[in-house]
Image (cartoon, rainbow, N blue to C red):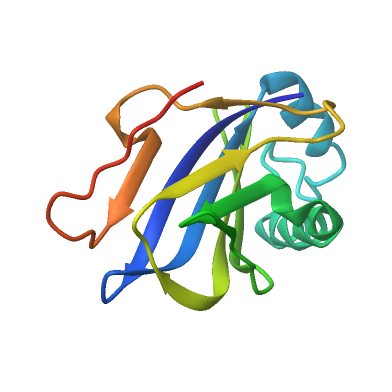
Length: 148
């Protein structure tokens, strides 16, 4: 199962306070995941069932730290439970987004963020284009640098 990932780093007064993840699933997994979510038989998953799927997905990902491993200034950052779960289905693709707040905002000099599945079941790729990683309200001179 492949996912295209987009990340927004949300800052509070020049401290990192949260990471927003947006994952778009491949068409095969998407088709499987939305089976039986269309009670109206209009070829669209029901909004309430998509919302429940988002909550279920996030609950099941908790033991894996939501596949997100940040190190800030060399130290592991710790998350509070995710908020703002949202699941959409468009053009045959399922997209899950959620906000991972840090337990406490932290001043960042250097941050390394890995998004991966340690079991190697799920493959992650960054989305195409300049918006694959965005910094929200970043201080002047702060910019993302990505490597594979």
